[in-house]
Image (cartoon, rainbow, N blue to C red; front, side, top):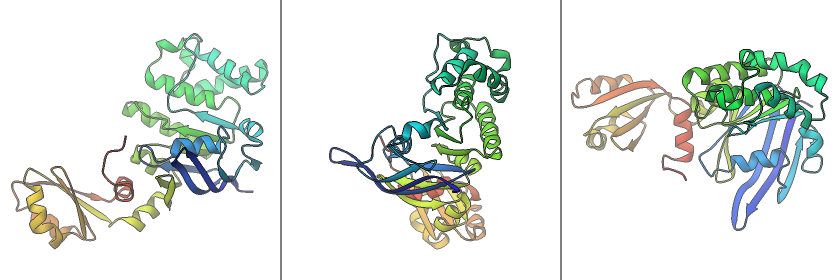
Length: 304
């Protein structure tokens, strides 16, 4: 009963392209679960499957103990969705957007009006309650979209890249609000390309590529399982030549990307001491992070 989303063997193809390939997934009540992957990995199709917006070719799926897609309409009454791109009604005020959206869930106006003050406060939009959408900043629109997803007091919130295009201040405010939701016992399913966002917010993560889940665990578990604990990034026009001569001597593993060499080590001190004598090079020493894991598992090549 602690599992609110359960998928087994989900498959979905479009023509000859297998977009989701044998997906198994368990998402627990009250956690923020991150779904990571490069463009074309199958994340958006997975979200659509989980919401019952499209039917799988095969496999089984339950959302809040309802079979999907068969009972998807019933299950979605307890779900909120923050889409990748804001689809607010530009002709309505902030309050009217919340009111109209609540009606889609069969809520009466009195119920919606009772929730609106708390939603506006949550989104830090109380002063903008009568403002029309075109007058709002990008961060305000994103916060309104989040507030709108909460109008039906959902148990699960799907968030598709919720902070894309926001400045750091707006992003950090959204992060605060999302942490508050999990503190209230809400379940979040988050897709993002910001690895810092996933590392800060998610209790567990799944890395997806070519329609398959390739690794699952907490951010710390994924880092410990896949990457050496320390990274030294070496920069400069001669970095590739340096790597050919010295990288294998100091690094357990290294990767060259443009004028940067990423050296993955258990003990960085010998390498750092060596680099202090290389005046033509610059370097940065840091702990391994989730982005290192992502790039190792999915590669550094561009995806369209």
